[in-house]
Image 1 (cartoon, rainbow, N blue to C red):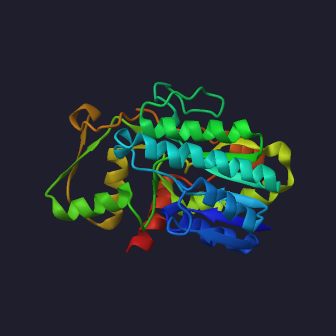
Image 2 (cartoon, helix red, strand yellow):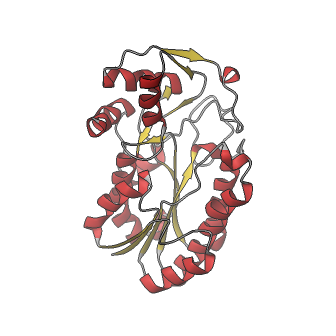
Length: 284
């Protein structure tokens, strides 16, 4: 298959580049090659590549900054996916697009399933939900993969921030009343690659799927596990979200139910602790 990948140098895109390469002819674009704010360039790029699959790993992910950069967030996270969907339909290609747990408001007591109504709390979540809607409205072939709490050994993410701060400070204070599933970008990429051949062959499987590592943790629990695996003794104390105000509101419950993915494709990502331990080998 011919695969076009956006966001090549992002933490997810970097892993996708390795995971997707064995599946066929991969053409990968970094931000410098393909700025998703340039809609005309998107159209020209897709038409030149003539892909069977478009994997959109590019996104505006600065959750707090999005509150003051709404236009930019919506341009990259909503308008661009809509154009990619239009070009996917024109090419007869499958579009794989990543979305987020932040499309939900976090008030549900149980993990969110795909049919739950999105109610994003912040601009980032609203822009990602708008991107989902734009893709679906085009009626192209698509997989929308919602994930959350993504980290890796490179880029800007919570894991690397915790390691840096633990070396700079005598103690850490991390919120303990937000719950989710820390998800290693490599497992997300491998999971995507594993479902792609069947998804391409069976249009009836198109739709929205939740894809996170198994299990759950608070940000505090995640940070504590990171420091333990790293052998860093800096104490980390739990605090309430109210003690650490941010420009963007976060959902208290970011857990996503992955049963649909497992029942449809037979894919289940490992427990987050297992993946974190493997990721820490890369970090070291």
